[in-house]
Amino acid sequence: MDVGEKVQVRRGTDLWRGLGVGWASVLLILVCCESRGREAQEPVVVRLSPEVAAANVFALRIGVQLALDGPPESMRFGAACDAFRKIGVGFLRWPSGGGRYNWYDGVGPLGSRPSPEGGDCTNVFGTVEFARFCSRVGAEPLVRVSAALPGLVRDEEVEMGPQLAADWVAYCNATNDHPLAVLRRRHGLPDALAVRFWEVDASDEGTNAPSVVARICGAYAEGMCREDPSVAVGIRVARAETARAVLGLPRVRIDFLSCGADGAKGFARAAWADTAMASAPDSYIATVLKRLADAAPAERAYFGGWYDALGLAQAAMGRLRHGGAGVCVGALSCGDLVREAATGAWEPTEKGLVVGLVNRFPALSPLALPDAPEARAAGIGVAAAWTEDPRTLVVFVENAGPGRRRVKIDLGALNRRFVFWAYEQLEAEIARPREAAGLPIICKQKVGSALRQVVEIDCLPASFTRIAVKE
View 1 (tube, rainbow, N blue to C red):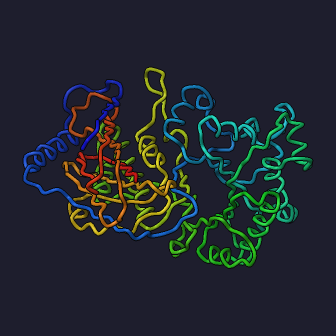
View 2: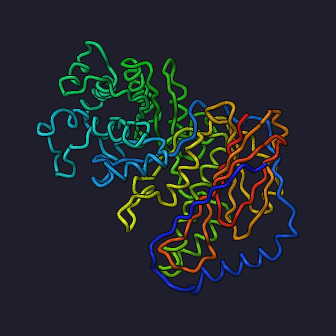
View 3: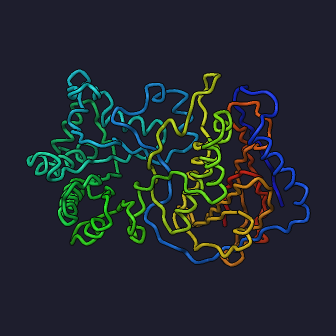
């Protein structure tokens, strides 16, 4: 029994009038042809497996990176922050980019903070400003510590690096009479910043042997956990051999490990912030994006944003299908998720809408890849996982193609008494005449009963759907 449906249509400003030649007309023909035959099509049935593919420590959340100077000033307050909060940005990783950063330069009164050589950074956006921005947008802070490695920095920096990182943790989290807690209070901050997630970035390994990089990373992790045992510390390296050396460190607690190198995908903790979450699409999306690369600028502007967003959705689903979770930040920035509309209001971008769907019910324990040959043959992608709430199942369904398909999600094998489901679906009106700066995106929301253990939905063309099913 369906309880209700809500539809929101998001359109851009007028840019073109009438039906353009090229992609709009081609996709319109494809949709019309599909529409003539869809009455005879049988629904695609996906029977979920009860097997859990992996027991992850952290749920899947997509976040963004912040440069050393933080987001642009226009994004730090007001309506832009509201737009970020509505999306539900999972993590903010800072400071991103290469180079080393001494956190002492970015704390205390603004007038007393030194300006780095070259004038590229004013140190106005420091640790406290980062933590406050995270609080405004409702995101978890993830602090990146660049590891000092031999051959890349002076010997004294290598020696002092682990202690500098430990001091940073203490400044953020220490209480009582700890010297760095006293320093923080002198800066006008009586309460701890409570930064839980930290990443030691040693991805610029230079010519150092894997054992050397692993040993230094272990020293960083030990010092940071000694200052605050409750933090989650991860290591980011470039080579699979180094990742193996890190995992082999005795008596060193590593909460997550990032390595995007070939051969590292089998590591239990390997998929973390290294995952670029760039488009990892199915063959149809790959074909569309390839053709768009050679298309006229107007066509690329009209279709490109949404198909890039579908590629991001595919990357997240692929992460779950391979048993992965954890935070994903990759190359995404604030400007990838929100933008200022012509009216002056801030709104989610196409990728921002996708991030909102993925982050709203964070997936923790992915189910084994469903046995769904019908879905694969029909171009339907599916991924499912138990969420942080163990009584809630989330299912993602992606239909990148130009045809509408009816999909049935069979929950019977899970042997749970599901009583309620809700879905949100993002659909691009790919056949609509080009009257806007970008594809109009429709957001459909619907709730219903799942007493019969089957959820049935219409997967519209070029759509991404998240279904939440509750016991």
